[in-house]
Image (cartoon, rainbow, N blue to C red; front, side):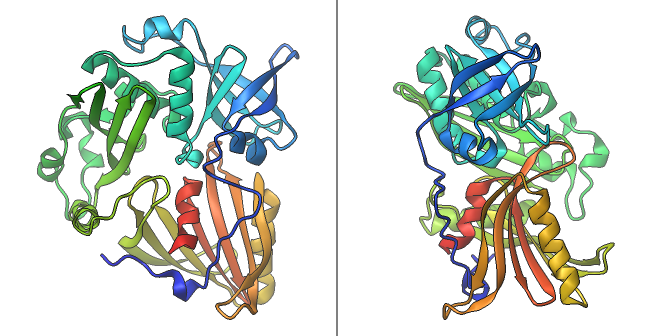
Length: 371
């Protein structure tokens, strides 16, 4: 697969006033079910600035603290696991409360999650001392950041036998191929550090991931999320190419490449669509949909409708071409889905067509502007 060049898109994603690597905290007033309000120092600050700009959120519910394994039981007695929503209840994100501090997590902030988890681990002295403890914390981290507090039994997989047969029958794939990819969770130690590797499936089992997480004295690092199935051959080639070319994927160094499929279709409001997918070197992929309308008014309606539905508008203004001349309109925003999950979206509108890029992770969407 060829890493995409976005010169053809003439993008320049300089987003003023927003930083993904912001380590600071901000105060957030959390309104409880009994009407009382408690103020928490909230990490990361970017969550508050982007999702709760008025500094107020709702405690949607507290999560069960049981059945997370014996190694986490003492720690869980000292914290609260919560779901937090905006005052309009359009979305929920996961949080952990400890000593008037609220640590928030969501796939949208995949670039921030490792840093926030490390802050939480240092604040609560959650440091694995055995391989089993490291694996328990790794599973908890995935549940906290990507699976909405679902129990690991819902998403950790070790072989095709863990998966209903209908979920394995992708064209060109088979249970034998999946079994050659999957294996039981592994933990290796290197001095004071533990390196974990495990496989996890999306809850709808659309994609299977290989996760690698390293635990050290300061928290976690080297967090890697690679999709391995379906399109197993293409994914293997993609990651092998990055490794061979000495490309190091990190929170600041995300590489994108066309992959997997292309499709055409139609929308209810009359647009023809061209749909593609961009693989990411680490974390959620980026979807690309081009809407071709017959009138400029229809394109305007789509653009304005999505702006009106946005949880947050990061930037909105003219779309400039490579020569600095106005080519159309652009906007980068955060949307909430019917299931209360969040996604980041970039819109580029010119005349009667709209180009949309979307990802579950804001960091990976912004990687478009670094090509």
